[in-house]
Length: 365
Image (cartoon, rainbow, N blue to C red):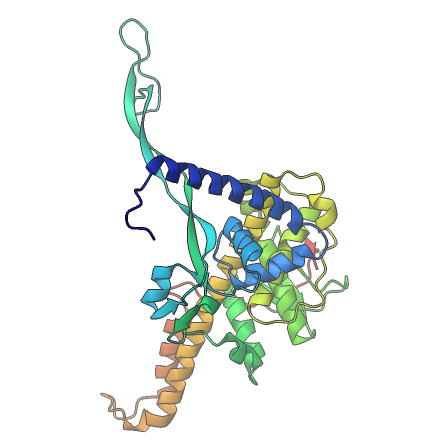
């Protein structure tokens, strides 16, 4: 950079404004394109790689670097002792940049009612308000960096092991806040979420992959379409609810390496037709938030299971060497306390898994 070149703040503002306009146009086109054909599934697969990014930034990253898998700022990579390779170009995304302004508005009393002077004229006052705004910033994919290995949870190994299915299933059960039953569903459905009873039923005896997919689909219904959720977000069509539940399950399955080749989204084309960009983006964000919440909870339980395995391995190898106050303490009870403490999540234990019950189907897969 030329050190003698003077910084022109006016020019910098204009350049940022132009970049924001270009990003906005790119986003609008990207959102509309997502709902065309196979693009919807491609977006969901990408969402599975970066579930904690906003929809806006997921789309921007996907458009600029479709093979991205883990993105962070230059400084964040540096903190992890990884450094951006020379010559790599940043992926431009949007970061919050709120600012405060003074605004004149009518004064309100403690109950929120307008205050008037003796002549009946409203009393005005100057207040400071925060304005939401965004600015373009650069992020970098891990493939654009070199340095120390990034620690991972090792989920693929957990799923692929001999007891991997049970581990994953247990983590999902622990992440779902409603009761779950495995039963023979006579209607032929693979599973359902009963809105009135606020519980999930899954067809017993299915393949491991199908059981996980179905459980995640119904868990998505429980998160997004319960009575409580409807109070907060309003009523939705059956097509939209099925699209949201199936999409959320797809993202979570993709994130953990569960086969998603048989997923289809028959409702997407009809439901999205004629919708404006803000409405389409809002639905994508609903799916992203639900998937991100499920992934976060499942990760926490998988980590807890890892801790338990480490404790088990240590006790198996060194249990006889540890001095106890009680000459002969029951090892089983000690392990049980350790396991219960880790898996309970400070009082938020697994929902009860009840014996088979048969009720009407609410949301069937």
